[in-house]
Image (cartoon, rainbow, N blue to C red; front, side, top):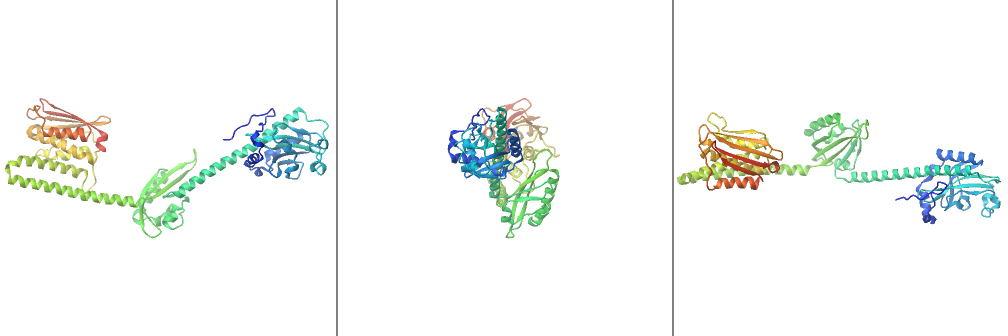
Length: 505
């Protein structure tokens, strides 16, 4: 971190002792890269005014470098530099106040100086030191005359030189700050470029006309061809079966200034095709500025193949599970024919297996679009209980919600148990009986209310049976919910509360 030195009465920072080390001082001088400021208009205006202020023919802004004194701006002299060892300004190092030499031949420090004994025959010199913000002596703003001055500079002239020197230092500091800012920006851009060039995806950018102005090296590595300049030049690299859909989506999103996403196959340098995911976002560099587009192309071929293999495996598994249900139901039916006394149990078992089979087919269908909704599952389970004319005797009302494959089985077991009990003992055992299942959204949870009407009177059993234990295990254990059962005059009433998170995970 650059520290600021305290200021002297001249307004210039006090030179810091650490910069008495010449190597450190020169490091600060070099940080200004001041050669680019030679003949700078602002510095030139400063030396012009300094000469007029002090009635001197020569004025300069100087920097004391390792072997020379550089003149960044000058008036009344053609040279751009002098050797460092003869520079008057050497005597300003380590000070912040003006150095004034009224008559150089009379000053023992300069009596033998070649600038005094030979051309340009310096007689008068006044140099206001230039000190950087951190306290390093840089050089001077000086005025020079070939005639000695009998009177020293007035207080006004000395003060004026100090003010002009401060302006010169501000110009130098501005230059250094600009250089540092540019350097930081360049370093960040370089890091960003290295990062973009190093990513495994193709990265690109385009202007608001859709003309591509950058591709990282991955494009050439993947396709073996020069980067395209327009969107149409992509077409030979996109699989003919995917091209129309991809281009239609791109041009629509481009025209609307919206994010773009598409999957298609891209041709590799060896002629093979691989699936990729293309993403692009529009970015405006400022209010009212045109959009620029930045995008990536990511290889998803292995992921897509893995998903296809998983789906194929899931279909095969579903087919095998369906066959298992059929085999078990067939074996149970065969056993019932051999042992009629087991027929009631076999009937209940086959009904439960068929309910699970319907739930499985609903969540993992073999063909057609996959549906995953609570209402759909319940309607499939209750379909066998329709009246002879096809009217449902179990009506599902209210909101619907998505369910995951994991919760289909416990839900199917719970509501199959309720429907079976109702068909044996409750409302569905009577010709006019019916059931209403209302589903309500309660924020973080779903409430289901099972209400039976028109059946025979029911009462609370003294001992909880297997069905009750099954519902308890399914609702509280697997679905993380709660339930409450009441045996009323109108029939059985059961209330369930199930967290939404449990239904979708």
